[in-house]
Length: 76
Image (cartoon, rainbow, N blue to C red; front, side, top):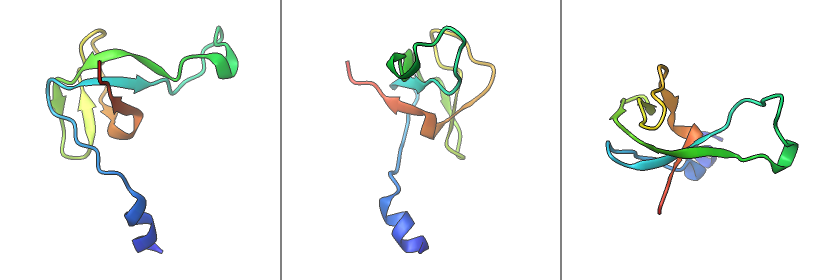
């Protein structure tokens, strides 16, 4: 069972300076339901950790790290 799961896991690697999009994980009162945006802005990765979290992305300074499964690379 573990082998089948591990075969489908995507390895994600982010380096400082990469452009990424952050997934919107909360529902706001003014959201437009299924027509709302799924990802927020473009951010620049400043620091990465070994556990898969990304911290301090430019644009808005985040105090908390963001998990790697909540972001995806942005290709302009």
